[in-house]
Structure formats: C-alpha cells, structure tokens
Length: 377
Image (cartoon, rainbow, N blue to C red; front, side):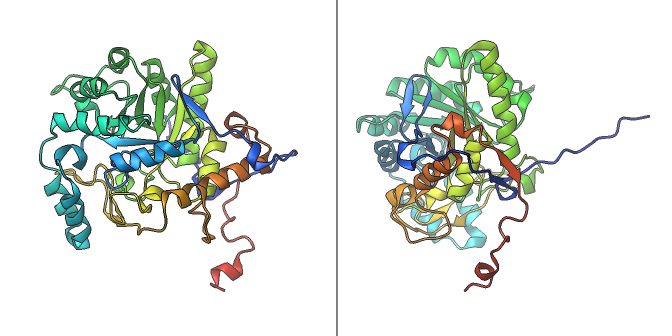
C-alpha cells in the first residue's frame, strides 16, 4: 500500500497569542539588542532590501536609530545615477500598468560603479552598511561591495537552499562564498528545518525566514509555495538551537515579512526570531523613497512577476513608526514600544527569554470581545 501524504497544521500571526508571564518587568528595563557576527545593534529591526523602502538616506536614518537597513544591489539605486525619476514614474503609473512600468525600468543593467558609490555614501555617515543581491550575482557584486566597505552582505532570493541543481549555470557554493567574504553573510529565504540547518552548516551568519508572506508578494498565489510565518520561524529556530548545541556557533534567525503590527513583531520573537525584517511597515515612512508605494523584489521579473505594487501611503515618520508618539490604535506605529511592553508583560528580560514565551493557538482572538470595534463605533 502506498504511503499516504499527511498534512500538518501550521500557523500565522493571526492564529496565535502570547501568554503573560508570572513575573512582569518594567518595559524600559528589557534588553532588545541583538548581534550578528561581531556587530551589535540596539534595535532588532532590519529594513527589507526593497527599492521602495531603502535608499542611502533611509539607511542612514535607521542606522542612527540603532537598526539596520539593507540596500538592494539589483535595483533602481544601482541602475540609475539619479533614480528619483524612476520612482516618480512608478508612483504615477495607473494600477493596471504598474507592473509593466516596473518591468521596463528594471530591464537596464546594474552599473558596478554605483554599487561602490551607494555603499560609501552610507558608510561615510558612520552607520553599519548592509547590501543584498540574488545568488546569481553574489560572486560578481560581493567583492565590489566588500571593497567599498560593506559590513554585512545578504544573498537573497524567493527560496534559497544550500544545494541548487542546474545544468545551465554553476552553483553558488555558500560555504566558499562566506569564507571568501570574511564578513557576516545573511542568506535567505527559507522556511524549513532542513534547509535552515544546511545553510547554517554552509557558514551563514544569519538566515532570513519567510516565503511569500509580504504584503506586496504574490509567490504563494503564483507558485503555491510557502509556510505561515509562526511555524516557519519555530522550525528555523529549532534548527538554530540544534546547530548551536552541536557547534557552539550561534546563527541569527530573522523573520522576514508578514508583520503589520507591533503584535505581529512580538509574536515573531516569541516564535524564536533574533530580529525581524520589515518592508511595508517602513514603506509608510515619510523618509522611504517609494512615495507611498511598495513593491516586492520579484515584481519586475520579466517572465513571471511574483508581486504587485501596493499603495501603503505615508502614515508618519520613521521615528513615529518605531518609537511613537502616535494616536493610531491599530498597532502600526511605536513598534519598539509594543515590543518592550510585550516583553515586560511576558516577563522576558531579553530577546532570548522572549523566545521562550509560551504561545497558544487563538484562532478567534481578533473577534473575541471586539463586537463594538467591528461595528466601527
């Protein structure tokens, strides 16, 4: 008799809740710092390598606040000496033409000299510089970025594995690449225990966890692949703990995508994350270059777009989104305040303790006792 395929239940942020601790801590006294390699950051927050989110100016602003922004080396910042016209064209495009406009603008080649210029423009402002490219371009852009002074290099695609089979192009050896770069290399994206384990073995200093949860991403609709973020983070964190026990080397788990509110961010850490990567949340900042719009890195793909342009609007400054003050009650601003308060309520003095916070399945929590909110009054 053939073995029958069985499905396991997986969970996203809307389906779980955190259990308060037996001891509570003053939110001002919790430690939310995290490290990757020898670099330590005051805020466990990264800005996604999306053109609508990160340009050199935004990277400097977030860096000075204690976070880390990742510059996309495959995008508009390295294709145009002055990309502002491209951003304006994207913002002005009717919705039905937006993807075609993106495809046209992204057709041009990356100019290697702009890679160095963009990295140096951030570096000279005294903040940590992180830059990202797809695996196919890592061998070419990695050395250029390193020479320009990049501190962290990110190799990222929709789905990344340590073993890639292809007759047409040589496989990128992450083990060799990480060794040659000689600086922390973050690799993503993955969602399974096995893939995470193998990428750790290959030398990654951090892993991006998430396939398809982003607000502008359509990979789950187009390709049918992905695992809800709570389960994906839990599985990757389990791989991290097993790898750390076996080797003594700690690899950071970074939940990437699908987080809209402070509550989502808090649940990512309780699932096992060391940091979170945000895209649309930051696209709403006045400092973001997208002019109130956001699109995924795979949206401009010439043959198989896996994303869409969305209107996020500009809801506040980066300061408000991270630290407040805010009058919004939907949890989309003062994300750091929410994290500190949640950690205090859960009795977690630091992020490692937050990772051990008890979670429960709560499929009805959005409607539980919320009848007046649902009525809009």
